[in-house]
Amino acid sequence: MFYREHAPTSLIGSIVIIFTLSLGLGACNSQATKSQTNALNQSSNQSSKNPAGHAAVEDLQVVDCLLPGQVRRLGQGTYLTPGRPVLTTAADCRIRGGQYTEFDRADYKTALKIWMPAAESGDAEAQANVGEIFERGLGSEPNYEAAIIWYKKAAAQGNSRAQFNLGTLYEQGLGVQEDKLLALNLYRQAWGMEEDNLMFQSAAQAQQEALRKKLTDDIAQKDSQINLLNRQLNDLEGKIQNETQLAEATARKQAEDEVNQLKAWIERLENERLVAYNEVDQLPRYRQPDAPPTLRVKTAGSAKSLNIRDMNFGKYYALVIGNQNYDVIDDLATPYSDAQRAKDILEGQYGFNVTVLLDADAAATMRAINELNDQLGENDNLLIYYAGHGSRIRSGEYEAGYWLPVNANPPPDDTFWVSNEFVTRHLARLKAKRVMVVADSCFAGLLSNAPGFLLMGNETNYSEDYVRYKLAKKSRLLLSSGGDQPVLDNADSRGHSVFASAFLDALENAGEITSGPELYLKVHSTVIEKAKKYGVEQEPEFKVIKGAGHEVGDFFFVRQTQS
Image (cartoon, rainbow, N blue to C red; front, side, top):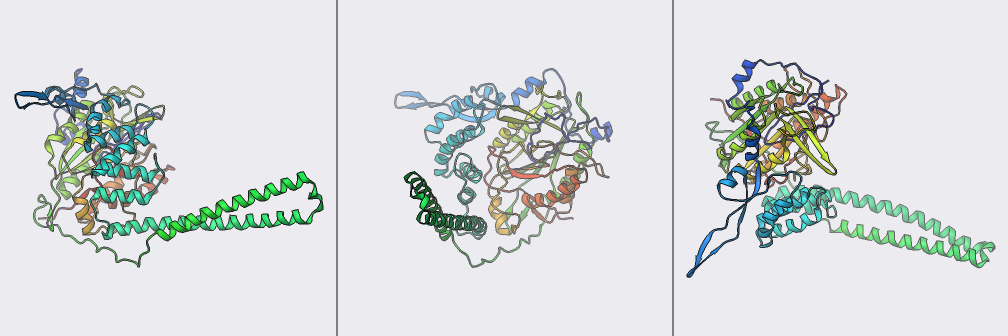
């Protein structure tokens, strides 16, 4: 069997919209010709490998840029306003006269210097950025406690990004005591949903019932412990009264100490049981509210308009990257066929404007992602699909994921690797409202450290109410072929990887409007079952890409009507 990684030390990072990363331990012969490569490519510069390429890559890095202040007049005099922090590319920062520190993925102290003054002055966006810097870590371990302080400041001003990020920390118990109900409420606020909304009440009820069961189980356990201790206490007290050998002072004192310890233990358990009873009593109880109506929406008019029942889904773009033939490291077997079929389905069935890069080097990959910023509008959708090698680097507690472009060197030489951090920072500055990354690669789940709790559970009824709420919010989502682990590159009869086959089949057979979570649920079990045939455990993941501007939105695939 073949894996979509270069070596056991490699660690891939999922990237922008839908990226399918194909990695292999052994060399795999190409199953596509160079003419196929030329037919699919829409970028004449995709395979540039000139010596200046590395300098171009540095210009494309997103940096924390401090733009010069503005000269303003007050009465007869002038004064200079404070510098303005922005996220932009290194090249753009220089052109606008700004200053920045050379990009260092493992050191966020320089970023704090840029954002902290604005955060301390009360700017909510800057406060959210400072929170994300602390959550990522200052070159070593994350500082969740500091992140929470700044998230709370921004969340109190209504910053939806901070509200969501704070919710993920409460959900996972990072820096605070785990509280899924509070996390759910923070997600609701970030979503802009009223507390009496039926969808929120349904999700909250599910969490409340889970908490109720946990507390009830705790109460039952404490009841059992108290009964056992009471029996031991009665036996010991009877022994003190009935056995004359305990008349000796030392022995009696020891027995009395044991009795007191048992009484204290029982009292503590009774207090804990009382607290659990009180918490259960405070949970709301419902009389089986009606489920939201099933979404039944028909696509109307031209597929390009994407307006359904006064809902404007915007335009759809996709960047499909398939890296199969590598300069130095082992070639792969399936990325060409994965990319070709992804292009056909996205264009033909969903009306995407698709750009394809095959065998792209580092500069071509990063340039394509950077250029999306000028192409996308505020209500548009971006899907990026990447197939190629992936890797990872661990430094102490810090672990970073990467894509490996075709000019990549074997680990640990990461000179031409494309980091998760590069992708996340570009996603944060894109104007597109909805972005989804699909990554088929080893360690693809490392692009996001967010939990998979996306407000709704596996049995969610994706009603029109759901679509309307989600459509108004930004989304930055990751669908990966696996988590922090290798994934298969074995091909099916059509030449696709295990994950790509399941994903593309699900997309081809989907309904008129399909949300990201719905698509994930269709792919999840199929991949697990197919991987087991090779004796491999592989489980896809679906989660938020934190630090990229997610606002509890979703990504919708809208099938085009046939003319």
